[in-house]
Length: 304
Image (cartoon, rainbow, N blue to C red; front, side, top):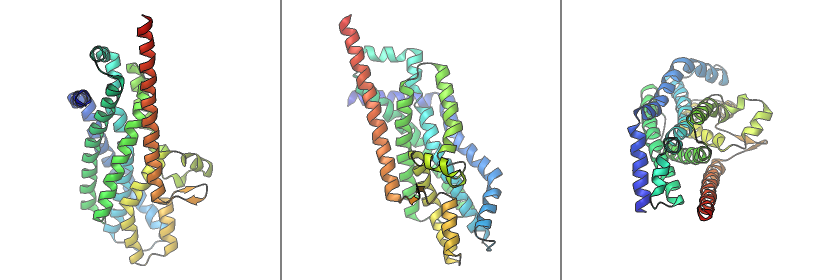
């Protein structure tokens, strides 16, 4: 445990010491919030007004709905993209030769693997908790309708998505070994994950075939959980003001609060099971890859 602790401490320090990587990870969620609030808030407002058939809505409630959707989108993307950014240290150690220096010491393969995972998880979680705090402050300003339970469940969603993002990035980064590969993967994840997870555009707006495909991806359910916990209380307020139940259901469907897998609605309990299962799957794969590499290195050393 002392070895894992020392390596984890070293990796966390390296992440925060790299001002460029840390600053980019920290600022990206803030930039997204500013861009969303500036360019997309009016679009989302029009969508809500149309979905409710022109029903008059209090401006603060409308802002609360829009703010909740913006917050869930930002957190859904950041939990994964920041994880890929913070976990790049694993690849940079290969490129710089630091990994060779570390492995000269009596460090076991699993200790090294877990230290990278834990350090990336800690670094990513700190950034995403900061982003969550900023989003909560934004909601408090424009329209706060969250309950204490909503806040706690949102933080739980963030933790699980950070674990998922760290596990996925650990598996992907395991195969990278150059600066060019780091840049390529970072660009692809940053540009593509928001779309395939439904963070940038609701999955309900995609074609039926694409919706079925995205139903197999765990990120879809992480985004839906964040949508539910940031929007449900505000949507319930609409119901109290007299919005028809059909309009409420249509609103939940259009914002991905309700997710359907081949026509069957997926409950939140099942969404959590899918997220946890995906985390276990990717972590197991990461461990297996490291075990296989350790055996390969052991055989190579024995031959020499």
